[in-house]
Length: 294
Image (cartoon, rainbow, N blue to C red):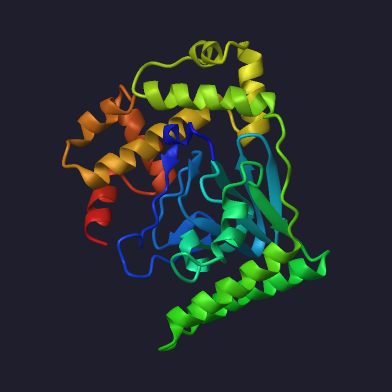
């Protein structure tokens, strides 16, 4: 969607290199299976994503809006939409990710138009499914069926998933009204500039003044934009972003922990270790060992 989305983290499907790149994340509070450290930084997927909240409430935030998804409700997040998912108190949800071509049937199929009309629409960020509308209930029923299929896999698992996803998409596509083009919000445009600045300078000493100047706004307005867009402070977001980058380096490189801490903007090893453990529940060294020996 955004031409600038390269500036945010691309959360890659863990099954991208398999012959069936369908990924189901079972998330209970801050614990995910398959394992995901759950850093609260804005990211995007090349895949389509559906979420079903089994218990509790989650908040999904994009660059210019947010939505609360309660027990028994669902959400569709379009491909390439920059977003973040946070829990409110205790919660349990499933996230289903898959490439758009799952719904196109075959190369050159006219069904592709019914997919592209949604995925190529810059104003179609997400759809919130509640129990207020009958067709929303039908979508939610399909999501619940996906949960059941995942728990009781049969020899026909792949085919059952493809059929169910197609039925779900058909219901949604029949009833959804595609939004018309509209002006981007001021908050969204400002956050794009600020987050791009963080991506380019996170390893440096960044102050609130630096962030506000990157969008040509005051420090108070910068803080307000973070509150409206992501319900957090600039400092907390920057720390989460640095920790997420550190986690990537710990997993993908053999660099000493001290070097990694400095490379992502932490100048005191003790502070880095404390923040990392508070977020992941383990030390950087233990996290590396766990990731390399799952």
